[in-house]
Length: 119
Image (cartoon, rainbow, N blue to C red; front, side, top):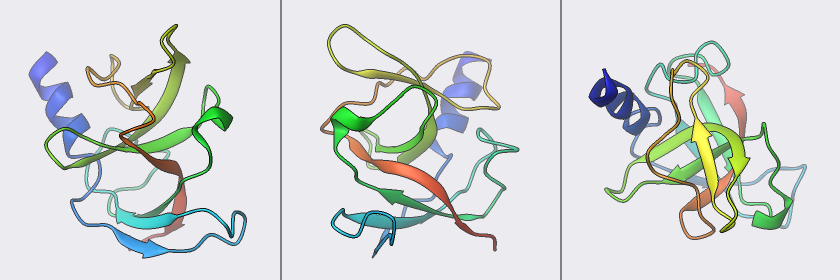
C-alpha cells in the first residue's frame, strides 16, 4: 500500500509545464500543468488544468495547495500540512492516507496551485 500511495503521488500531475501568467500575481512566474492522478480528488478533478504561481516561499501557509518538482523530474501537486523546524513543508494529497515521503523545499517549489480549467 505504501508503494501505491507513493506512485499516486508521483503521477498526480502530468509531466509537461507551460509558462503562463496569473492576473492575481502579475509579477510572479506561473505555469500550467494538467492533473493526471487521483491523489487530490475531489479537490482537483482528473485531467483538469492547474496553474502554479510562484509567490515567495515565505508566504506559504498550512492548507495551501502547491506544486513541486520531484527528484525524477515529475511534478506533484498536494496540500501543505505543516512546516518543519528546518523550513521544509510536509505535503499530502487530499485523497491519500499518509503524507508524501519527499518534502517541499524552496528549491523544488513551483508555486501555489489553483484550477485553471477542466478538460
